[in-house]
Length: 285
Ligand code: GLN
Image 1 (cartoon, rainbow, N blue to C red):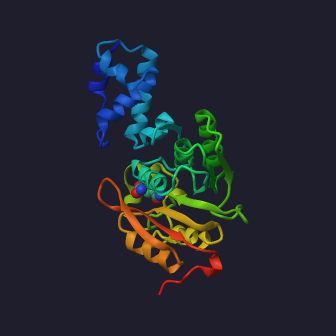
Image 2 (image 1 turned 180 degrees about the vertical axis):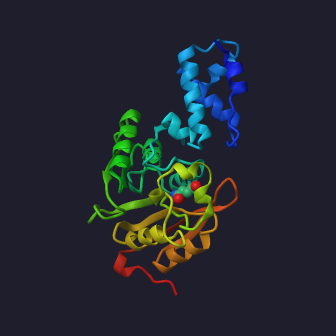
Image 3 (image 1 turned 180 degrees about the horizontal axis):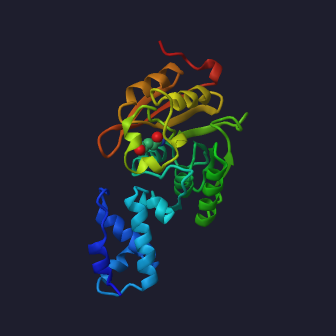
């Protein structure tokens, strides 16, 4: 039998930018222990069946499969979420969207909508931080809705509901004070789609037409029918799409339009507010 330390030292993940951490996460999962166990007991022998499981996981990682899909889990905000290949893996970047939404609206009863919820990450984080809110999360893909619902049940959050809808399609007549989305925003020709972890994620969660803005345009266009007067729309977008998204928001009559930067210093979230009823919404010059 091999020790934890020797298995980690011999784990080869040449293609991974985070090889040591990947190996630690995978070995901890193969052992059914928290990652801290590995550092506390480096000399401990690993049972043969766990070592075998670990070898199988390393082989998948060497093929490029993201650690989150191998483990079936990913941390987001304060939550441990189940993930599956029909959904995007929640990213730390998207925590900026959650943070911005929370800072914008006080802790009073609010109806919030998360479009393209995937694992439910954004909706669940908002519901968890704001027990007085009623959060709705929708996704076009039935498997994503089922996954988000499993995450909701495991987290025991009663103030969020998930249902199937392609953007606003199944939400006729419903209005919200806050609409958030991390939609697909990568241009179809972006070479980054052929590299690293994104190769394993569903293109439908990543790609949005020739300029990456197709879904953002649909979401902005439909917002007036689903925002309450004074309601906010917050969108995550690509690092170089801030100007374009602000222009789209202003063109659709949004005011107080601005963008927020992620930890890498890139404009990552843009937002705006719609005052008055849709018919009264002012049009930008
Ligand atoms: N930020 C992700 C990436 O660049 C894309 C997420 C998305 O399209 N919503 O990999």
